[in-house]
Length: 153
Picture 1: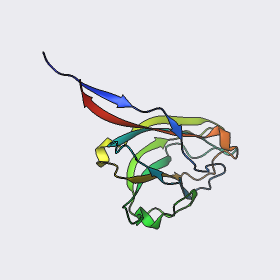
Picture 2 (picture 1 turned 180 degrees about the vertical axis):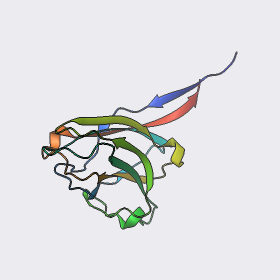
Picture 3 (picture 1 turned 135 degrees about the vertical axis):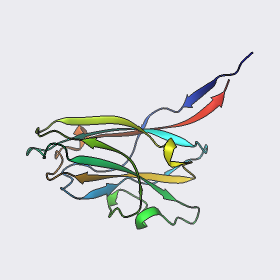
Picture 4 (picture 1 turned 60 degrees about the horizontal axis):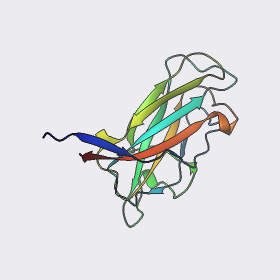
């Protein structure tokens, strides 16, 4: 009998990261999460809403992976919690390309697997690489992750 690789997926959970009114060119990191079950990767659902002034079509919102070792030395000198950050060397997970529309949702699901195993501690960061701020209402932005494990059945 042949075996099949199936994926065990944990429930989606929100991350703590304030995206309301994130300025053009600015970046924000989430609080760090602990990967207690040592899952190798996660799926990340990101929905960001453009603001009251339309961004330039074709510009992007970027999603990055931040990591920490057991000594809490973190990628890009990230802090442990939700805060502004300057992205220098964090790994790019993916991008959302925008249109020139106001208060419009841009969303996708991203997979961290191509970037290698997560390790014990990780976070994400969003950089607004458009020319306009994000929508000012936090509930208009969705940031959720689901850890997963490929498993032979």
